[in-house]
Amino acid sequence: MFLGIDIGTSGVKAVALDERGGVVAQGTAALTVQRPHPLWSEQDPGAWWAATQAAVRAIDPAVRRSVRGIGIAGQMHGATLLGADDRPLRPAILWNDGRSHAECAELETKAPELHAIAGNLAMPGFTAPKLLWVAHHEPEVFAATRTVLLPKDHVRLAMTGEKASDLSDAAGTLWLDVAARDWSDDLLAATGLTRDHMPRLVEGTAQTGQLRAEVAEAWGMDRVPVAGGGGDNAAGAAGVGVVRDGDALLSLGTSGVIFVATADFRPNPARAVHAFCHCLPGMWHQMSVHLSAAACIDWVARLTGTTGAAELFARAEIAGAGNGPEIFLPYLSGERTPHNDAEVRGGFLGLDHDTTPERLAQAVLEGVAFALADGVAVLREAGSQLSQLTVIGGGARSRYWGETLAAALGVELVYAQGGEVGPALGAARLAQLAVDGGDPADICTPLPVSHRIAPDPVLAEQLAPKLARFREAYPRITPRST
Image 1 (tube, helix red, strand yellow):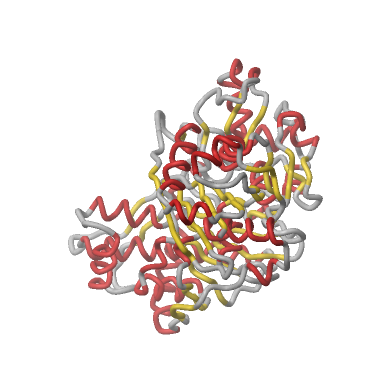
Image 2: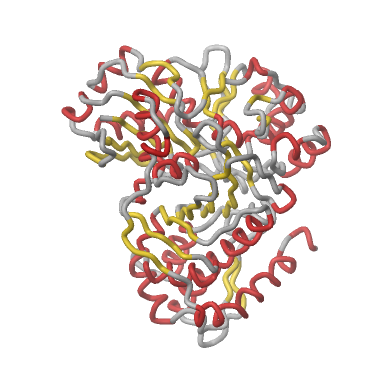
């Protein structure tokens, strides 16, 4: 038995797999996000550990006793600052925090080689600009910082006493030489840090220590090894078998991600494409990241008094795809790919006296699809040939939305059975590789297919004028244009 733990933004999920890869048990625990100021997004690192313990303990004790290894996945980019006693000095600054826009410009000036080394633009979501912000606005905290950890790696420290990070998660800091799979001394120096502030680097399939005795006792397990694990997207890819060059997935969670596995390092920073290490040795990946995806569904459901996502999708279906004039710009938390704009905000265009909650719902489904279509376009510019995407995440539950997505993106969507388990499944598979070894392609196999949705050319033609208006709208609403 292998245990995968995913430290998400809205909660922690623990999944137990048997040696054949079947899901045996699951446990979850909720988390909340604090937004004390505009653009801020923070969490208490102690809440991650409390939720991890609750999620693990929700699994049957007999299953826990059979666990032979643990893998961890987690939300990327979060800055967890520890003092000399390894206690957090302040709340963690999360991936969707937008306060450090000015520091991004400063970092690009201080480190002109940033794009070539890190393979990415400086964006407020990444970790390095957050540290510059702390240095400017909370200098006493910065001076007291002895270690910077990512969210899942803070949980690893509580589990094992070890400070380590896998390469897929570390690649999202802007401190990694992504091609060389090592920390960059130059990029660290640009933020006033050194390797001494960083955890040691490991592959996602490597062992990083064992459960501390008191944790093992509390969880009813042996002192089993803990694998390097992965950032949430890389671990999710391992969970659904996106491990070979050209394999790709679409994750429809709070954010939307298109992930393409690559056999080499293929950056396209000019178009805000992320190029990171994969959680598997000798592999990399490209990503387009959209900060609001399923989050938009929840938002418009609340706005229209809809009871939940299922009813929202039903309302949208009443309106029908491509019919109304309404355009939705899904930038509720800013946007990464392709605009790299933390300040832009969402909006509706084309509202009239006939606009209904149903047409608003449909416009939101289309708006998220159009943003993802922008992501597909820039990934293709970066050399990825996308014809098929495996769909995971909560948004994968709607076949109706899938038809709009397939038509807008121009790719076939493959829906995997159990894909909603996501990164925790991949973390458990990485634990199996860390304990038993073997070829990742033999362990990280594709999940059974539930159904496929091919692009409907008629619907694609119907959506094309709206997609064009969507793309024309961004330059008119961004604060940078005023």
